[in-house]
Length: 263
Figure 1: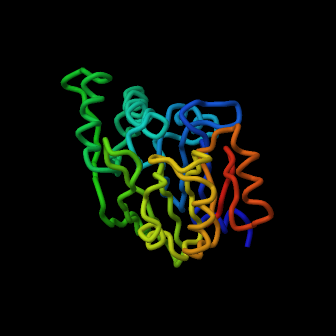
Figure 2: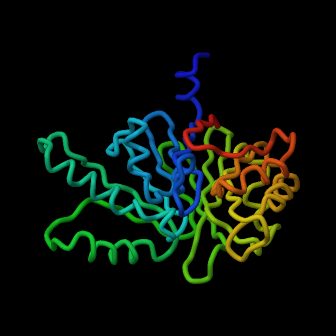
């Protein structure tokens, strides 16, 4: 089986940004592109994500679904500009070539309300609009033959957060978004049990109300029997310490920008 055929038969995840709020040369804010046949799902859209997509030759119009885990700018800042850029690009195309399918935006409760507040600031023209469909909060949906489950995540108390679980052809992928050290382990185990690929943040070296540690990632992988975990949302200065904790384990890998993962 050649690689092109294998990609079509599997989900492919591209790491656009594996860093935190402060972009660096090697790590950009959170952004991940999941591809399957004709479907592209953009998972989180932190500042610099649009540039990362353009750098990688991805047509913004080829992405029909946008998932937002929560409302911090390193996960959400490019979401509205992403939509607005597509709309402006359409203005310069013949009517027959313009985007017809609404952009599906899925994420936590209050998503549409917050989006509309951004619209008041960034897109004040009252008669201009763009096709968008919002789905909010804990639920299960289907896109093509992908089963997508949104589940509640404990991150910060001032807004809701969700993770995403995608199932296809017996394979499962879970992305937690940012997650607090006080999120109950038993609840997380139920969400990620036996998953093929887990993308999980590791934003702190000590337990924090809003971020996970590498020790917690390791415990979760072991107790939930995760097949492969990729740790992301890393501060560059912590990378060597995290790798030291992981040691020779093959089931936990430090995510890198531009990394491609077949699921």
